[in-house]
Length: 168
Image (cartoon, rainbow, N blue to C red; front, side, top):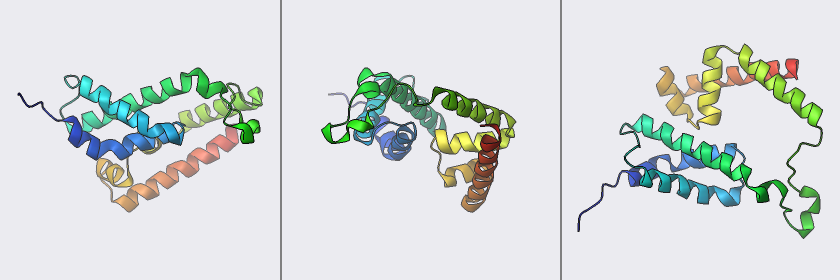
């Protein structure tokens, strides 16, 4: 019997936490995160030929796949309208926000704030909060120490908060 190339196993061990983290940040319910993590790596196994060979490319491919799985999870009807339980009837998940005008104003304020950020500030926020990079990885990428990356991230978050408050 011919042995298959096991590239996904080491990727799973190395990037499982980052994939799980990005799914949680994108609002996937905790009970579904493990299932979606497994689905991401099943897709990676099925599409092994398309998976980038370099570690950084493979990581970005896995995180992009996780974002697509999270988007599909949110599109499912049962997650938009399902009542969580008899005890929690008030906690029904709604497809529309309670105050659509306030929601739109906040959304527009967030977009305006993002546009006003410097490219370096926007990049560090995206790498950390959306792509799931750790502070150590950010430091390595930016040529900083871990604490230097933390300081730069904090400054970008503070500036973003100020801008959102100003525009929202």
